[in-house]
Amino acid sequence: MTDPVPPADLPHPTDHPNAAGVRRVAVLTSGGDAPGMNAAIRAVVRTATHHGIEVVGVRRGFSGLHRGNLALIGPRDVANTIQRGGTVLLTARSKTWRTPEGRALGAGHLRAWGVDGLIVIGGDGSFHGAHALQEEHGIPVIGVPGTIDNDLYGTDHTIGYFTAVETALDAVDKLRDTGASHERIFVIEVMGRHAGHIALEVAVAGGAEEVFIPEDPKPVDGVVQIVKDSVAKGKASSIIIVAEGFPGGAQGVADAIEAGTGLETRVSILGHIQRGGSPVSSDRVLASRLGEAAVYALMDGVRGVMVGRENGAVVHTPLHETWEKRKDVSRDLYRCAKTLSV
Image (cartoon, rainbow, N blue to C red; front, side, top):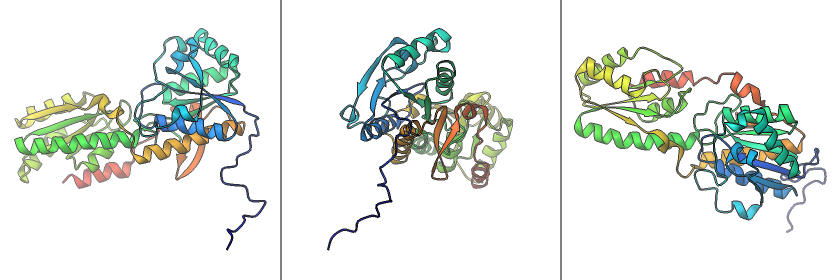
C-alpha cells in the first residue's frame, strides 16, 4: 500500500513564499542574556538556510554592529547549541549605539554586507535601538523577545522566562529546607526590576507566605502580621518572595520582619544565577518558533515589529508598542498566591 499523496494545491507545511525577495539577513543578541537565545539564533539560521537565505551573525550585539564585527554563519555553526545557556553570538550594552553616529556606522556595515533585514533578540532596550536604526536608515528590523523578566507587551511569554522561574524555584526549595531546619524566616529576592512575573510565579509554585512585586508597592508592615499568624499556626519558618524592583527590596522587607517580630530573618538575593543554565523545554520551543517567525516576517516584507506568541498563535506587535503599552502581571495568579498562603 502506497502512502497517500496530498492534494497539489496544498503546500508543504515548510513552504513559505519569499515575497520580499530576501537574500541575506543579519541576527544579533542584545542586552541581558536569557536561556533560549541560542535556540532562537539556531532557528533563524536554519529557517533562513532552508529557504536559500544567507545569515550574517553579529557578535557582541549593537556594540559589535557599529564596530563591524560581522561574519557569515550557517547550520553547522549553530549545531549542538539548542541546549546551551547564554548566547553564542555574545552580547553587550553600547553607549555608542545610543548616538546617531553609532547607528550610522552600524547601518553602513549592514549595507556593505548586503543585508536585507536585521533580527534583534533582546528586550525593550534592544528594541529601542533596533527601532531607531530602522527609522533613521530604513533597514527592516524584526524583534524577538529575549528577556527573563517577561515584561514585553505583545507576547504571553518571553524567551528565558520559563527557565528563570525554574532556576529561582529550585533555589527556593533548597532554602526552605534550611529555613525549616533552623526555624528561620527567609526573604528571597528574585529578578524583576520593573515587573513581578518571576516573583509571582515562584511564590505560588514555592508555597511562599507572601510576595512583593513592583506592580503593587504595598506597605511592608503587613508582612509582620502574616509572619506572626504563621507562627501562631505552628509554622516554624516562612518564605517571603520579593521582586528586585519592589521599593526597599528584600532587605527592607527583612528589616521590617525582624523589627516587628524579633524572629531571625535571612536575606538571599538570587541575582544573575537566574540568567544562566540550560534552557528548559518551554523556552527551547518558544525560541525555535519565534526565530522561525522572525525570518518569515522578513520574507513577507514585514518590518518594525516584534514576533510573539499569544494564545498559541504567532502575532506581530509594532516595536514601539512593546515598551509603550504595559504588560500587567496575572491578577488571578496574584489572588491565588494570597489565597493559598493561609
